[in-house]
Image (cartoon, rainbow, N blue to C red; front, side, top):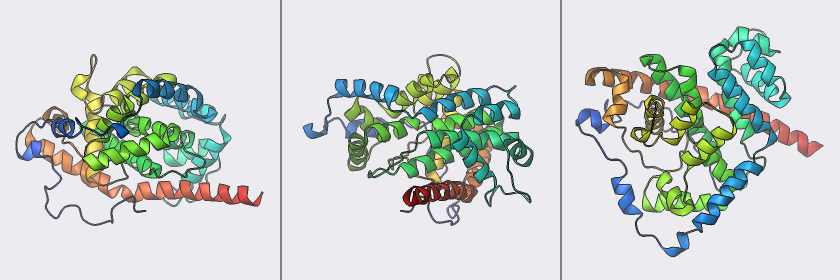
Length: 351
């Protein structure tokens, strides 16, 4: 399975991936065609929605592994600007498997230092606090919501690739524009599709139908979710964030990242950052978001990149180039995690 496109120059047409909203000066309405495409569906696609939403709530309450509880504590700590490396280490030390994976990634070819990293404190010195926060967040989330026995037809690895790619894009957007904390933007980007992961783990058969419907109708997967499940991954993501006790700005951005202008109160900024990061990640073909539809971001979202069209184009290109070049880093990261999983499987087989 090819999760990422071959490494070739994405710039032969120079502006082929720049949204039409920049080049054509228009505001698109991304869901109009999608809505028309699913107004009429055969009865066999209709699941008993009111029963399913109850099942989802029960699944969220009962099916999450015990290890997921630490994720909320980690993200809360990282969200707090006063949190030190010692504070993060104190939380992680209560989860030996997480600590082991973190040290393994820290010693990988991409992050490896001249000397072996054997402790969290040493990892901070070698990697720096910002990189450590990024790794801790990513590994803890993936580790807590990965299926031990994945025999379904769903490309969960592709979902994870897309989530990490979007997190990278959101981080890069904020590093260039300084419009939001880059560590917070990274967390929101990483978690923006966490509802998809949870739905695939809890209801794989139903979610296969969602993916097939999106493919048949060539529509957004979020609309297929709403049609078949009477909910969607953004709502599930918000429920999970609330269970983990995450700050409201994070859960709100996840809930509204497809519709930033619908944010009822507070700033739309984080939701718009995720909307733009998701768009760039899809255009860079990092991972598998579950559908092939890529609505263009609105002018209000693109305006985050600069005060003029020229500045928007300039920063868009900067972020996209950096994101495209980060594919190797993402591949190596997941390669390290995969090797760790393979070693664990071999050990279980020999036991």
